[in-house]
Image (cartoon, rainbow, N blue to C red; front, side):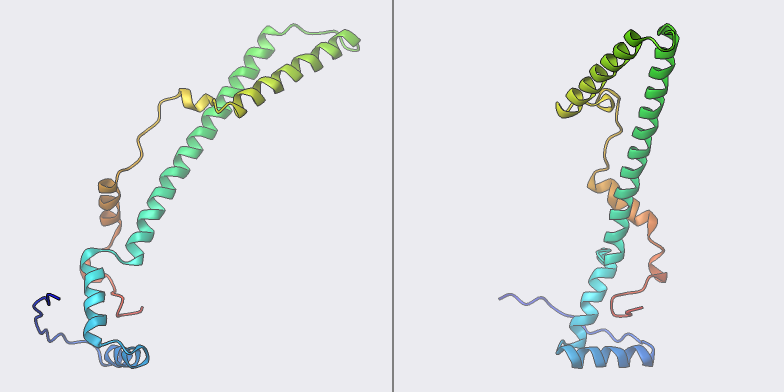
Length: 160
């Protein structure tokens, strides 16, 4: 097994934090240098839970924006369809049996067409251009932009 060279550091920490570290190490049986090294690795590599959560929140926010856009497009498309339908469908005299049957028949065809498109995987939104999803580099940049400056972040060893 190749052992990496280690350097001794002498950082100063608050007394209360040093006591918490000693208590934690005694309870878990882990050496304090291992805990501090893990905390530094997470801090410097930005692989803490906070960073990972920020990346996930960024993805969820972009997905929510796309969903909102899709809903707005569908609402507008439906509104346009209703306007066109009212504009081109002649008024039918009230109380005629033929008008009622025709309306029921047309509605049934409308529902069938929607069911066919929906079950076949075709979607109106698929015909519209979509923005690309973020790649890992963009997510890393977004997480870095969302993170506060290194000096104000807490580490795993802080526990705060």
